[in-house]
Image 1 (cartoon, helix red, strand yellow):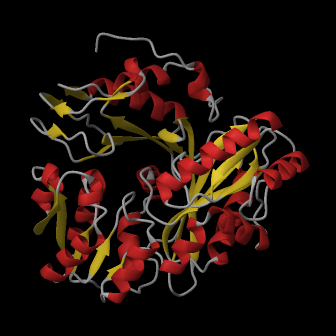
Image 2 (cartoon, helix red, strand yellow; image 1 turned 180 degrees about the vertical axis):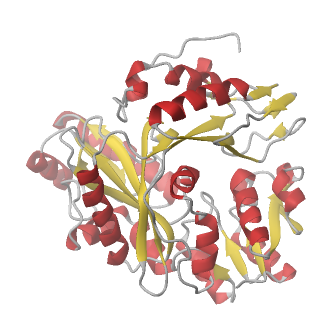
Length: 449
């Protein structure tokens, strides 16, 4: 087992990793930017090293500074969390060259699954259903139009090296193709340093369902059920739950088997997710693989009674997966509490927290790095906290979530709490009758809170 782990991240995920390390008896090192000097992950780590100015490119994305911090403090492993460098193959490779264990998959696995076109072809070759589209990246507009006619409009242009909605464009007809191609290509180049695009059949308003997998160096790969991530805005997830209300046991079994096939396709080690789109006919298709821990991992932990971050660390240390899958119990829902104003088109709302109260009670979990009088910096993702609720059934979980959200008090800034409360009052959400287009039809009613 490791002696000391450096957490190359910030916020709630850094604190989450620190907690798992402490339970394993592992010393921790926090890294922080000048803007995060007062963050809780700095307070609770055994050691802390400032790695640069507020902007992420000068701190959390600065590989030499992070490697130096690990070497100076004697850390023998680095946990990247999610975001920032978590899926950066070069960072993983540099860690290995520096004799520091990267807690995640190998550079080869990250590269293979980070190239979305290659990932899709790999899954196809191993029998995982994929969305009809191009075999790899498309070379130019002419080739793209030909493929679009072959599979039928509408189609989706996607950045091969991308994620998070960057470099994506829906093309409804041929006359829009060239302009969309140029725009998506330019955006992909700016976001990922790679302008390559591939093309897929666009599935209108599907469900977004992902399967949590774990793999170890002994060839064991298991899945821990699914998470429904269909409530999203501009491809950014806002509410996640497990199990999904959209699939039955027969489909769940087939999707789980496909997820394990996908893991074996790249001999996967560590925690990851196989993401699928499910159309209105209950056909499912591989979308992408995330080679890291997900923001929404707690919903799986709540229903499967597994500590996924602990398992990540154990597997990275060369041991077998400790907690094997069991039948999920009950229902869990996660609400992302962001520093955003839903009444103003989710405009970011950084600033000082004047008053704070977390909800509590049976079946309630809050993962957060904030505290009263803490100032939310404007430089990073707006995630403040994750409220995760568990209930014996979905209606029970929704009822408990309503109570918990009403107890959740954050004053001094705007948050998405009022938005979540209104979603819970929507009949479509309550009935499980929603898809990735749900928020396009959802109208937030301004309140005084």
